[in-house]
Length: 409
Image (cartoon, helix red, strand yellow):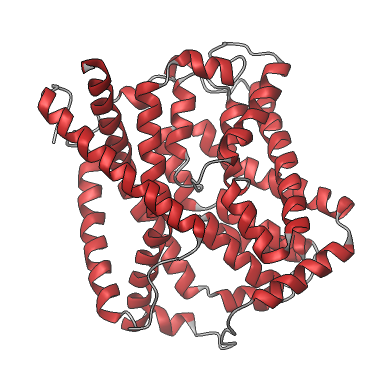
């Protein structure tokens, strides 16, 4: 019994330690993202993007790069672009870029994994867009795109103002920075449940799940030189494992770190990271927007391209002898989390900024503004998040009770 309780305490420490490592990076990424969303508006993106073509795909990729990394926010913006006339390929390019090429995601990956995964994330994200463009161009029935656009238009709830504000004036105004603080808070409101569940699950897995499980699930895990068959299977298992989760692109990075520490190959981990757009909640939302035929078509395209991209990235890095070394795979979960270093001071800075942003958000919030999402997915996520907080609270209590020396406040 004591062993179970000690593992419980350890899992809570790892979960909170993971978040402590990442908090400043979340804050920095969301500050940048919020500024971009305020000063580079969705109306401006819609005006710039037209039908499918090289220019539209490039613009979709660029606007995705400077947009939010929250999968569900990206889905909403993608629908808006699609219903306003953007072709499916540039709209999906925006979706892939906004969940794979954004700045804050690269920062988080650099903290939990290694530079190879950061490079793999950005190069792989571009490769995903190229492969998606080719596959959709060769396989998309025009009638399916037309029906999907009609479905999306029928669900468009509100008309947005066509006025595009002057960003030069806005960036100098108090109103503009109040809007930045509101966007910053909204970024957290969109992802706090995913982050809470993702970090908690990562801690639980790191403490309770033996390495043998990963070696069974990801065939060849722990091998210094897995063969092509094992690499392929791991690239397939990655998205399959991610499909039934409720965790978005920012919440699954600590889980990827756990896979990394258990010897899963570069291809398997990249496939898992790329899989934030093939999880079940995303499929359900796509079906709600476009109908089930288009949702399943997009799912099939994304699964195909992410598996191929992961394998290509794996062997591309292998050619240059740049694959992550297995000798460093235990550092993420074994490091000392709560020491006085740059993380401590950066966290203080962004905690202060977050407090100011919350104050401004509450002070300037409209009375009819809805703070919650009543969808089934969000309700389920909320309950999981509450369970996660209960787990962490009890685990911290056990940690204090046992008085383990590696816990530092």
